Image (cartoon, rainbow, N blue to C red; front, side, top):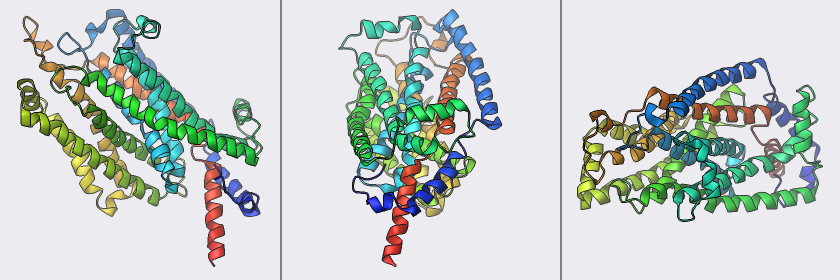
Length: 455
């Protein structure tokens, strides 16, 4: 959006109008329903139907078709829920924290971050249903929810965060829709009509920009405590129990710092995809990857600090239940997974990203892939291992109940949630401008004007 003190001469200059034409031509060429889009959505729809068929089996037979039992009652479903909530926080990190701090380089990235936030927050609410043995009772959470229940808090903040993220994606795009509605005449009629309706008769008036700037700024400030609340409340679902491995007073900031890591890596992967497949190298430059890589290093170092705290303190006190849990992680059944996550998902990526060559787009893509995968496995480590060692002894149960192993049904249902996220990202990025046309044109015009004045 235009800054409040944007010079009127720049706004109405011929150079600015030409820049709008140039930028919109580059970005809007990807806004189309072509054969590739139809084939891709068709493939995703078939895959989603196959995975949802697995859920119908679970719905019919019950949770017995999963690996969940009395000993381990939370498995990859809850790990997936925590991961999705975590990744959705990246919208707040990029748009609010970096945006309000004056980092201009995040302008082309902010909308991508909000698309990811919207997609992951939307599906996070659905993911929790997969863990319910009686999803028909979900309305009871809203009808008869108790204020004392952290689950009610979680549902409330996740829903609110989703709608605020949706507004932060949509509101800054209104000027772009107005710019685009006359430039997509060869697109389907429903898309043209949607642009006309959603642009709300935008006429590029100064007063409109003032109202829009103020509304977006309020949302950018509002979403910061809301984003902190969403993951703090999620962490309280674990931390309010006395179970070893969960009984921690730092789970709130521990979860938030981990959320920044997974979210930043997801944005980097999306940036690379749009840069290459949408041919946006001009707008998603190597400098953007350089800067976002530094952000990833920073949040990863903070997360490493909280990881050290999370294991050093109980390791020093070494209560009996914590001793069993830490032994399982450090040298027991979960040791290979635990050390792989810590090394391949945190330590090694940080070391590699200290070198400029590793902050180039393709190496950064590979590193971010490892970080994102490790982020999901980290949630699995948080959720599952602590349940294997309850305070009361486990007696008179089958041996296979003592070690949790996800079944094919669980894996398929979990895959369905990932497919839904990809479908939402695909639709939002294919039917609407994936980069801010007006902001990019304005910034480039301003830069050119400043260069001419300096000469």
